[in-house]
Image (cartoon, rainbow, N blue to C red; front, side, top):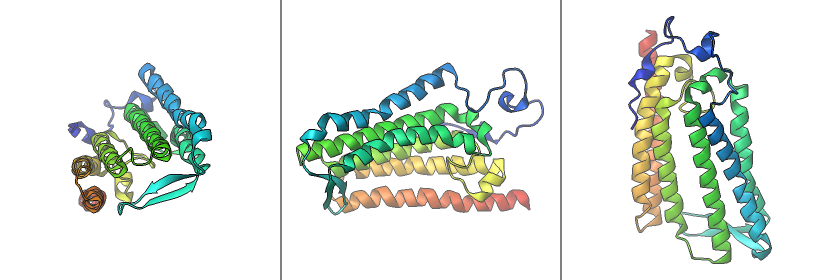
Length: 247
């Protein structure tokens, strides 16, 4: 886990962020450094791959394809045209994540965690590409992939990634544990995200281990119960910390 104790520093005079101060070198929320431009380009490039895959195999797909795998082992099927909706989520999310900072009242804070924000987007694009690949593979060769294992393991990795990134999030209305108390106080925000990050990382580890359990019900429990705890506990503690700093 990343040590983010420095997050509690306040933006006091003499320690102001250049992006907010109007000093030379000020950047707008839409500005990207060289490394960020590379990551943003990668996000866009990966986002079109699910559509390219769908186009390449669509004519060979059966009329109905698997679209959902329940933890009870039951598979739901739908028209093969649904593949376009699933594959189309990738470019839609790429554009949505690009747009959201522009309507966030705290838009300038995105400059403080821009690299993390782009890394999350890139992982989500890879996740959606894998999901599209699973659907295509199981449509053409049913039984090739142990879907519950792969999906649960990837969710575990996603939770670990979010947990590692959470302490770097700065106040905003779209990413992180956006409790009303955390949004009202920066110290509470930082404490909430350090705790939430640790819990989410642990939830990811448990979920990843659970992916290799023989029972699908055990997989579901090891994935969802830790996730529930990692979501509820920071919310409660956010309120507790807010009461302490405002008393």
